[in-house]
Length: 606
Image 1 (cartoon, helix red, strand yellow):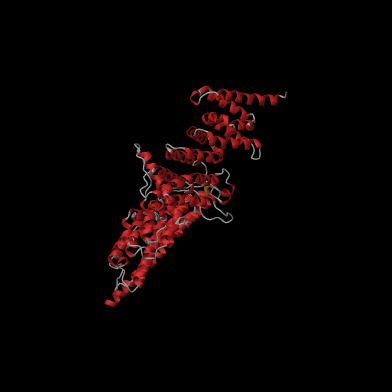
Image 2 (cartoon, rainbow, N blue to C red):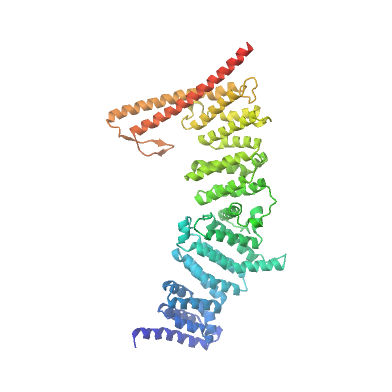
């Protein structure tokens, strides 16, 4: 007898011997030893390639009670063997049939724990494969459970999502198409797994408007909230050319449908209800839960208002300003993140809300809400600190859009706030240019705008026409702000005659000279002298070194910049001098215009 055939007989004989021994026992008489022997023999049959014989044993009606009590022990070796065999292998097909039989025959409670344990133990590249393999038997088992069904469904969904969360979310078109780890496919399989339980909740709610069994509904809500945070918050959800059905768009649509079916979609969007909040003794855990919920609801708002998932369910009775108000907290959550996928969602949501509004329609009272002050400040941080160029540019466009939507008093208040908080010369220069545009509108329109003329404007100019640190202000670092301020002052002097003095600039001229023009003169003289001396020293050092390739180091804000040759350093120093000359020429022109205007008035009066 060949050795292989002998081993087959041994493995199967061992299993048959245990089966025959247990067949004569009552269910209550099964001992721990019986369970262990059955598991070892069954595992040996699987590992030695005799799944067909094991399947026959499991399908035998006489062994029904044994399989009911002991079959769950085979889950772990069974999963290992399924992954070991190739897709077209008959042995793999036999293993899959065994898994299906176990789901039908085993004690639901025991098999439930066995399946969950297998999902929990998987890791790395096999996570999605294992989850997808076990979803159907897990669903069958959960549908059989009578006690603690909601808890068990919740535990299953939480376990699955916890296992998926560490996996990287495919972002580019190529990554989505490849779906290397199977995450796209797995997420949609999990939604299908949850559908019978969603249907159960819907059915119960239809039976009674006072449906009180909230446990299953709450577990499904928790699953949707987790799905919104991962993978949807991280995923690329724009429609991609060449992908007929975007897997994450499909998944997002399914999650929205579940929320609508269990009547939680509108409450989440408008009432900011985040499900049952756990009462953590540890405040750190409570803060983490709150942050996770906030990010999930922010993603939900993005799906509805930008991607228009579930928009058909949306009431068409809300004003654009109210929708903006509802979304500002979500926009703030997204703009505080640094990841491209989340920042872009925050910017898209903000832009979408603003585009619904007419210019000058947003009342200044909205700035009394904390979010309406925080969000533009977050936008400034994106504009100045984000390393991704297209997001920086987009944030600047959205800031302008936000400014345009406010009424005059709102613009005025926003300008004051941003001038005080931005701490960035480029942003301050941009705001000052906006102030100039508003003054121009006020002076050219028939209707008088009190916020950008008279005493209100003078109060605003106090923030604009000054040097933050007097003559010692770093003029190079603040050049954008200084040039914008000088251009504004030049405009005011040209446009507003001293006899009219609509803007009040002529009344405030002495203060402007004291706080801005004189310190600027002193600062320019000091800065030019300093940089001219630096150029002289650098040239002397170059002569001493006998080489133009000598490398020097430059430190900016405490950080060492890449090494520069002497020629590069001279170029930077000359560029600084050019900036000072430019500021000086505009300053001279402003002072000349003031002098001409004052002389003209004096000539008229004499």
